[in-house]
Amino acid sequence: MTTVVLADDEALLRKALASLLPLEGEITVLAEAEEGEAAVRTTLYHRPDVLVIDLEMPGVDGLGAVSSIRHERSDQVILMLTRHARPGVLRKALKLGVQGFVSKSAEPAHIASVIATLHEGKRWIDPEVSALAVVDDCPLSDRELDVLRVTGEGYSVADIATRLHLAEGTIRNYLSSAMQKTQSRTRHEAARYAREHDWL
Image (cartoon, rainbow, N blue to C red; front, side, top):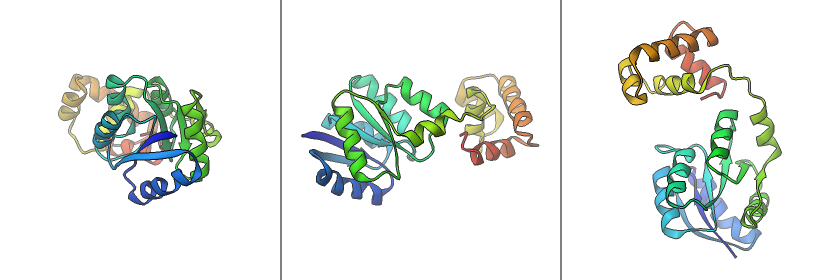
């Protein structure tokens, strides 16, 4: 029997998986979480064989949650559900030791079989996820993406500098470079362009 914690902010999907996974394999769902911080608390409390976590959640996202869990429980097996596996995100997740990636549109039977595969100590990346991740057409550096991500939240240059622990001049340089690369007139346009292209 494989024990699982499910973390996803989409209640319908989470509840469906909680009901269907035990029917598809030798799986017991110990608990559910609807956002990143709850995912960390629930995983550390229940210590499941496999954590099934959504990449995109409000507050602390999937990567942030995984990073926190790794500090406390370095051997936690993790399956990440994703809609948009951007190359940078996939690389970060692999660096954090995520063992599996499955598309959120996958059938519960497939997700159950991947959970079993990971529990056996193997890895799994869905072909459609890896294909999306290989096509890296983003010209922006990781730092430029960081700056645009915070810009998109409506912060001023001074606030962005404080949040990212960088000088205001450095922030302006990153923004200027990002605007050139996206052929945008303003930083907000550049952030919108990056979001529309699934780079953020």
